[in-house]
Image (cartoon, rainbow, N blue to C red):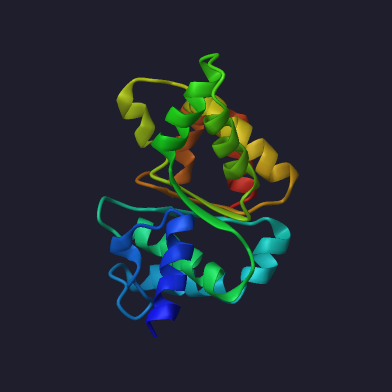
Length: 184
C-alpha cells in the first residue's frame, strides 16, 4: 500500500539511504554471488553480531556492489528491528568533523558526530577515498568514532576499494586494530 511505502521511504531517508537504493533487494542485487552469501550470513546472525558489536569490512573495485551490499543490511535492520541505522560516506564524516576540529563552535556538526557515534548500526562508505582531497582529519575522525563505538559495542560496516590491511598505513595501528577486531 502507499501508506506502507511512505513509511519505509521515511525510514530510509532518516537513515541517509538514497532513493536509488530503495528498491534494491537480495533478489535484484548486482554483485558477486559470494558477496550475497556473506550478506545473508550477516543478516541471518544479526542479533549475535549486534550483541557482540561486530561489523563487516566489504571491499572491492568500483562498481562491485559494496555500497548496495551495505545498504541491503541496513534496510534489513530497519525492517526487522527497532535498531537505528545510518549510511554515511566517510569523506562527508571527515568534513563534518573538521568543522569541530577546526575550533569552530558548530553545534549542528557536534550533534551529527554524536549521532554517528551512537547509532546502532553505522555504515562508513568508501573509507580511504577521503585522502584524495588532501585534508588529513581522517585519522583523528576515525579514531574518535571507532573508540567510542568500540567502547559501547556498536557494529560498524565499512566499504572500501582496498583490502583492510592497506588501511593500517593511512589510519594507524590503533584504528586498524579496532577495525580488524570488530569486523568480519
